[in-house]
Image 1 (cartoon, rainbow, N blue to C red):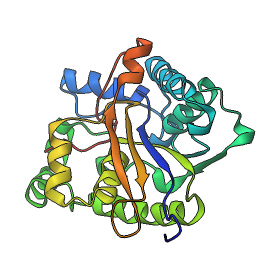
Image 2 (cartoon, rainbow, N blue to C red):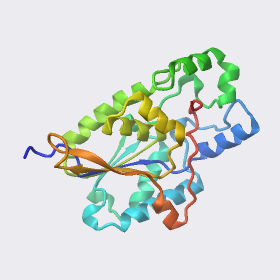
Image 3 (cartoon, rainbow, N blue to C red):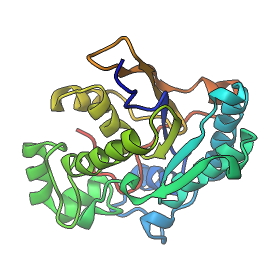
Length: 256
């Protein structure tokens, strides 16, 4: 048998609810053009509920046998994702000295450029031509000035997967990122096309602190492959009594 290329397990998690999610809800409900939050997107913290969700996630990992828990943790460099990873690791009873823990900027939120912090109403009001262009092109390929398309995010995630297959084969890897990161990893690992992943995105947001996981199966494919196990799994939150939230991230352009 060829040497195993992939980790044994990959868990991909969206960060817990953030203060930005709360501010976005308030702005959308009030019909405001701008989300009222002062921090840079990278510095937006978890809400109190987000901390509770991250703790519930960690407790779920902590109930696993030690040999099945994550031993590699890769986090977005954004505060809300990094805090989610740190809280989860601590709640799981995992010693940071016993694992690899890396904040990787390639796992950061999709960049929205000049659309940053604007609500759907704000985008239509301030940049009607961009709203029209995005509607015509579709969010997969549309790149706002100064920002990224989904294709741009996928490009950087391809290099993350190259690193994972090179440095963490046979390991148990937890990735903590953002909604678009979760969906773009699914696009890559499940070999989807534009229509398939945008339909998934259209139907529902990725719940905060939900788990999407893949397990290596040596009998699948030419040399073994990662097989989906859990998709947007929220049972850890339900079991711990943590409310389930699924608001879009703060600067996100409106959904199709």
